[in-house]
Length: 295
Length: 336
Image 1 (spheres, each protein chain N blue to C red):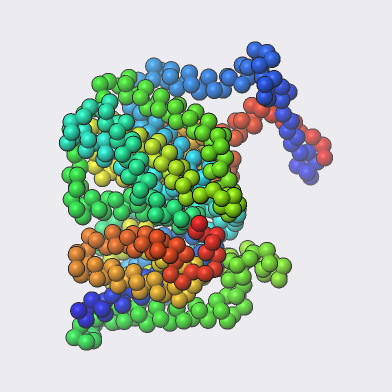
Image 2 (cartoon, one colour):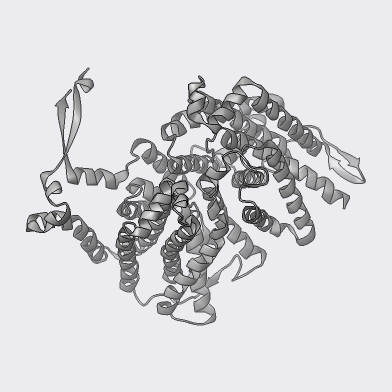
């Protein structure tokens, strides 16, 4: 019982971590970033390559990968999404294509001696090895780091979007782009900044969460789906909703795995989304723009 | 600089103007002008099987399947405003219904294909229905996860032959039936949809795409029309699925493969979104291409996506709009 509760909580924080970057980019500045999951996986593989192929320091490789992730986010916005602003269908298709190019590209084999990231050999080291006993349940330190990082990031981002000038400008362009522009906010620049921060956050989530298991390209699709599920259930632009939804999903999936087995995880995920949509179409705590996204 | 002094001026051809409306009936020339492209497509479709050898005839059949999927994607995305990234859901449901009807009730393909089209479409519509309150990116990603979800359920409950699928289903009598069934189905759905979107129902759907709040304010239930639209798109997709099952005499998890979701989208973007003919042409170009690249494996998906990206960024109008412009208008350089 304790283990279900504890691991449910850890699972929930994991969801919140993966969703936070997406929530910042889409929920706050309304740039659909389907490449979120792809960047997540890419950062994992990049860090792995830096550590194992180039023999770099672990911390240094993480920093470099995160820098690459944010530059990639900038590039995706500058070269792809910027040309398509205001055409939702094209935005979705184009960023989806970018995501597939990255994810399937990672699995390519035999081009220029590139072996392709396939198989269970790609594992990142935990930051601190070892376990600790809490309420008679063994928890490894990495999971505790996930929880701490999740809490710190959630609070930090709340302050960023509610108290700093850049963060407020991101929220402003989501609420009313034209009014924001009249007040002197450069909407393209704000969207670009949010893309860069969001990509870096996806990468950060990756380097914190991935040491818990091995890295696979498929995880990219799952991360995107989880992040979106959390955003749908929580409601747009609401931090409390995002956190609440992450906990709801995390516990629902852990409890169902505990009771019925792991195969039911995805069923529970979709079931929860559909249930929330039927009962409260705007999400648990969604207020902002709820009418425009859901009819 | 020279490119600033000159600009392109486009003018409608006089025959295009003359053949608008009832005046088209004034002479054979005008009628030919209107009929030629349509007849070219229809006759081309019907003659194509005769010109191909055995291998490419099979490819034509799969091209037809992709053309149907591209049509249903284009209809949903451009005429109703629902971007559905899960085309393989339709293929899967249609294919599984046809295969199971054939396996358990030993119905012949003549009966299973129409039955599976309707059953599959009903099931897909029911599955998608709760998500119709969403739109944009949310709807897109939920439809993207549906095929993955369906796969998981089939494996989890080990339904319908689980991971191995069911083999040894009935196939169609010969290659000519196979080809003409799908080609005629493509033509019927193409011209049917073209007519449908100009009817009152189609206009309401376009209204929903452009401004759903206005349609809502007019006292029209958006939800009902979206359900109807999804059902129609699912009919087209499920027919393709049922046909595919009987084409190979086999059903399995790869009916939910991502190829069925991505290639139609690439075909639609390439052919020209919102033209309905464009996606069909795009599918006819892309699927032989993908057949030729069969040896490349995973690289194919990457190539589709690159092509898609290039078209959406640098040629967003697509092939069909381009050809249409050339047909209806002439250009000349003009001094500014």
